[in-house]
Amino acid sequence: MTHRRPPLGRHFLLDIAGAPFDLLDDPIEIEEALVATVKTMRAKILGIHVHRLAPQGISGVVVISESHLTIHTWPELGEAAVDLFTCGDEAAAKEAVTALGPRLRAGRTDIREVLRGVRD
Image 1: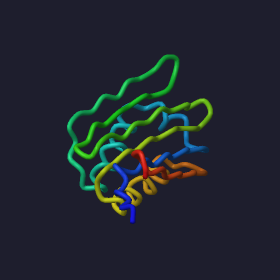
Image 2: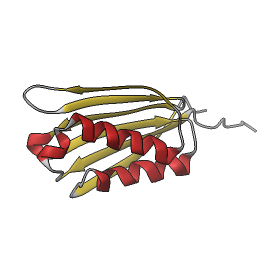
Image 3: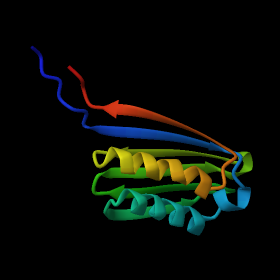
Image 4: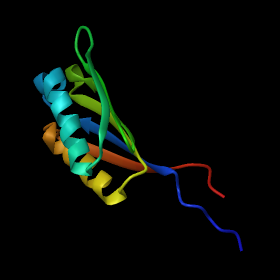
């Protein structure tokens, strides 16, 4: 009998649409949303970098002890792409990424989950 090892982690891919331009173009608002997401997961922040793009948009990353949370925004389209990879608590991560859409006042969200690691 072959023993299947557990996944290395889970990758949550969140696509956001219908969010306000001003929110998606504000580096302080985006950083606060990312930090709140990590706090919901009860994860430890190791580093944060949020960068304002020109003429608009934000790219940000929060490195956490369990891996990372990233965002890239297109304010002119009302859209954002979020990537959360974690080897931590699955339920807490799912709760945190689910709460991010409403926090960014998204009209629509789509969340996909991918197991990571080479599987037997």
